[in-house]
Image 1: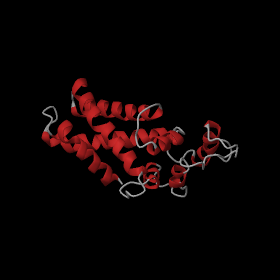
Image 2: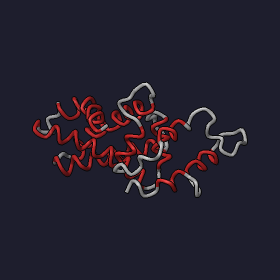
Image 3: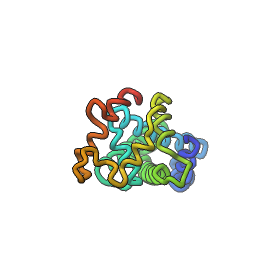
Image 4: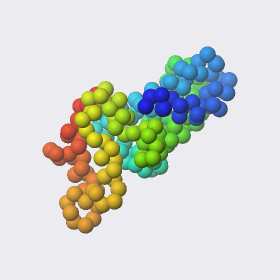
Length: 185
């Protein structure tokens, strides 16, 4: 999973990192690794704060912006920009430019590939297991992702899939968030 993420980052870094005179060539790999650290760190932070449904929704919507999806991408982009400023001594403008070119494109591709059942390069189970240090491996995150489709969310059987159905999947004593709370810290 980590190798596949780095391949996505490398594919999105040619112009922003490799051909960027603000980043010395001997620092290119470190700059790309920092993107991976920022993306994974942001996802882990969301999960450790109980925002599992937001991460699943982002992936299921294939990285399409809006609401929480924008917040996830913005946070990862800001973290990457800050790391480039601190670790690579890039100016704020250069760091922001690099981060805005690399992170959103990479995260959209990550979401697309994770949500695509025909693409085995990423799967939600592996991602969540890695982010939890393998502590969450007994939970079926792919099943949770699949429940976003086709009426499977009508938990109260009222014929309408709405916010109450969605929230019941994640909250309450039997809710998913309660079951995995603490795995991502």
